[in-house]
Image 1 (spheres, one colour):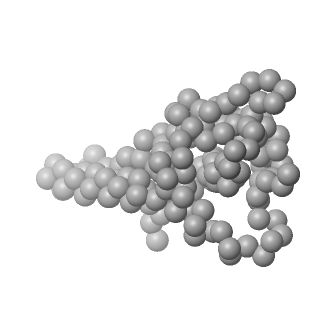
Image 2 (cartoon, one colour):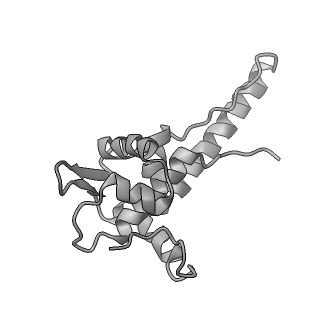
Length: 151
């Protein structure tokens, strides 16, 4: 079976961290990287690189200093799965190599097909927000190891 999209560790960590922040958004102070990493079982140095990328794309905001850390840059309803993926992985696009030995007409049809798949994927990922993901995951946990931040 052909896998069209792989949820990389980088994307997984980015989603995990943004969902943690979305759940803690109710007026809470910025959350330090070390706390996000600990709560999500993620390596802090790697997560810091991911968080910086999310900040540079406007998904997160960072605050420096003793009370510093990270908060969402927008509401969970305005951050899509596509936003997070593209911030850490780059644009979702067709990247299927098409062998040079194929006839030009077939290559063109395949390129159009794969481009359509990429467009559809972008549309679907753009329609799913952090708010949707939170709603689907809240209430399903067993209360143990859910990755939520504790006070």
